[in-house]
Each structure stands twice: as C-alpha cells, then as structure tokens.
Image (cartoon, rainbow, N blue to C red; front, side, top):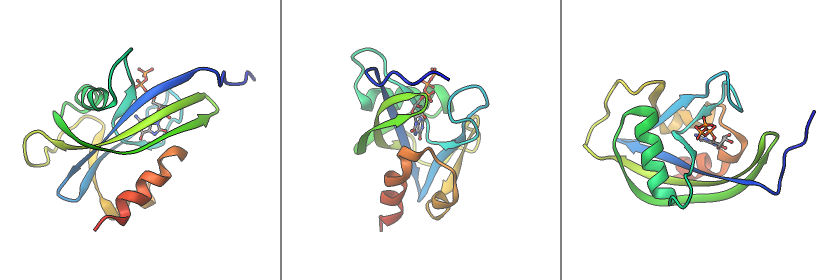
Length: 134
Ligand SMILES: Nc1nc2c([nH]c(=O)n2[C@@H]2O[C@H](COP(=O)(O)OP(=O)(O)OP(=O)(O)O)[C@@H](O)[C@H]2O)c(=O)[nH]1
C-alpha cells in the first residue's frame, strides 16, 4: 500500500446550497475516493480559481443548478488516505428562487436529516454549524 504524498495539497471548493431550510446532498460514486459517502456538490479548483467561483462552477457541472455564493462558512485542511485536501465550504443560494426537483444524483435534504448522513470526516464541523443555525 502506498502512502499519500502530504507535501501536495489539493484545493477543493464545496457548495453548500441552501433553499427553504434544505440542502443539496448527493452520494459519491463507486469509482473515486470515499465511495458511498454523502457529499455536497464540489470538487477540485482550477489553477488560480477562487473558491467562490469554483463552488458555483462545480455545482452547475454536477447538478445543473445555477447558484450564487453567499459566504465562506468554513475552511480546513484535512488528511485523507487518498491525500491532503484544503477545503473551502461556500454557502450558496439558487440563482432563481425555489427548489428544482431534478438535480442529477443530488437531492434536497432537510437540515435535521444532515446529522444522520455519512459525510466525509472533514464535513463534521460544517454539519454541526448548519444544524446550530436558528
Ligand atoms: N465534493 C465534495 N468533496 C468533499 C466533501 N467533503 C470532503 O472532504 N470532500 C473531499 O474533497 C475532495 C473532492 O474531490 P472530488 O473527487 O469530489 O473532486 P472532483 O470531482 O474535482 O474530482 P475528479 O474531477 O477527479 O472527479 C475529495 O477528497 C473529497 O473527499 C464534500 O462535501 N463534497
């Protein structure tokens, strides 16, 4: 088994898309890291891409939903067996009001459900933060 190269950091932006007290959540596919885990839309940033822009781009690519960034809610660096990632979680809202039903492999999950889902380890503080919101 090879060890991850911790001198290399992958920059990742994650879009936390909120609409009427629900969040867009999907299940990671079988081929990449952390298969079967729940996730928010997101992925690797392009060279020089800002986290807000990456979050909006990844969300559109993965769900087809156009969103607007609201604020960065949490940042961290996390070591997974597959490598070191620098994560920026960006709270976003749909560009057009409402909750469209068909969003690829993503669906709307209520805030109170988030704690029951199996997210990657690095998401724990973010999920706690979302659940503590009034
Ligand atoms: N999309 C997403 N990635 C997350 C979350 N939490 C978290 O730790 N990650 C980590 O961030 C990294 C994102 O990688 P990814 O594989 O989804 O990115 P990507 O779609 O650009 O990859 P690819 O283009 O190679 O398929 C993974 O290491 C993943 O484990 C999350 O909530 N959403």
